[in-house]
Structure formats: structure tokens, C-alpha cells
Image (cartoon, rainbow, N blue to C red; front, side, top):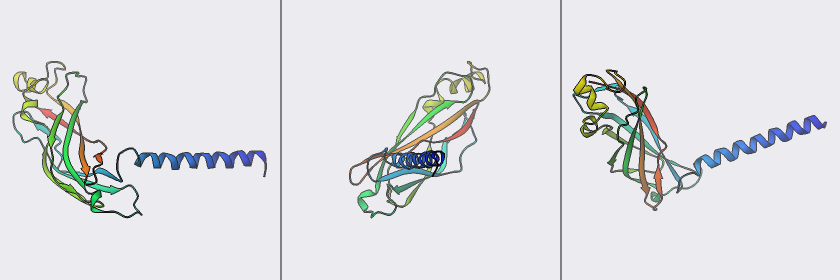
Length: 181
């Protein structure tokens, strides 16, 4: 085998080892033996009006995935849901932020299974009553950007605990919505 072939072979093996280590590291970031993921959003709002609610996501599906899919599982890996958090990122040039929303959430996501939640609030009237969203009602536009629309990226994370006592947090899941007067 030539020197070039050896170097190429060693490089390929090193890259494969890094790739496998990277995959393993991805699943080991959270406590416990399961991962919580948002597997589906359904009936997402594209736009909402500050004058009318509700400000809800039609349906969210959470999935409980064992980190070791070939291992054994038990009911102790079921996730008892505790809460969810909603944060907002403006997609325009405005800098006035919307306060995050943290809401309690109840239910069990069984190991290897899913649970669906209907009509989860992502925005509360108290948030709409404060700038920049209150500007849309009061002045017909955001006073900072002079726009009649406040485009937002809505990001949700879900928090729970396995019955074995491990804290579990989902990866963030996002969607975009335009807020109108």
C-alpha cells in the first residue's frame, strides 16, 4: 500500500470515528435514557389579530424516544409533563421584545409512544396588552418600525421528568406567525 493510500485510509477512518462520536454525543446531552421531541405541529396559525383570540397551536404531538432503541424499556422511562415555554424572536427590524410565556402542562408521554395536546396557548392577552403588540391596537402600527405587522418566530420547548426522576427537555421547535391589528 502506498503512502498516499495509507493517508487516505487513515483520514477516512478518522472522519468516520468523528462522525460516530458526534452522533453518540447528540443523544447524550440530556439526563436519562429517553429523548423528548416535538414530532408534529398541526393547525398552526399563519397570522393572528391582536383584537381577537385565541392565540393557540391547534395540535402538538410529543414523542418519547429511547436513546438506545435496541435496549429494554420500562414504565420508569415514561415522561410526566410539567410545563412548556414559548419565546419570541422578531423577524423585522424591531427590538422591543415580547415576554416569554411559561405554562403548566400535564400528562404522560409513554416510552416509545406519543401524546397529543390540543389548543396550547402560545400568546396570552397580557402579552398582547404590552408593546410592541399593544401598538397595533392603539396606533394601528408598531411605533418602532411603522409597520402594521409584527412578524414573529415562535419557539416552544417542553419540560418533563421521567418516572425514574430524570429531568427531560425537548429540543426547540419553531413556527412563524404574523401579528396584525
